[in-house]
Image 1 (cartoon, helix red, strand yellow):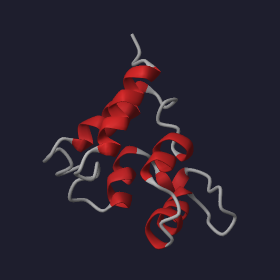
Image 2 (cartoon, helix red, strand yellow):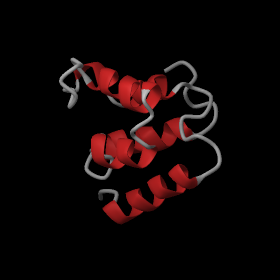
Image 3 (cartoon, one colour):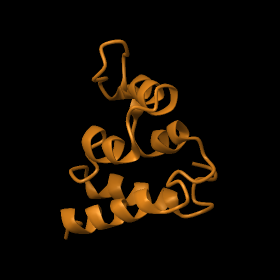
Image 4 (cartoon, one colour):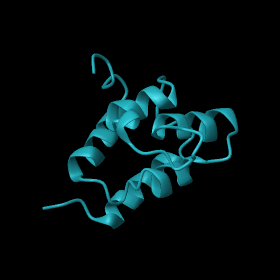
Length: 100
């Protein structure tokens, strides 16, 4: 049984709208890098080799991508496999990032 897009959307919307950053105490690139292999993902911005560079530029440096765009449009969180989605959710639980 797979996690429905509706359930994923409800979870992602909740964490985006919460007062606490979904990446907790980790910087966003460290958090996302534990879920997705950012250095192996192709960049959309031609100035970069990979997704790590895209995110560093657009989320951190210029802040022109909000978390909604990052998760839904760039990382396509509604379409990733269940294992990746569950790892994303698991990583949001305080303390679960230690040692990974």
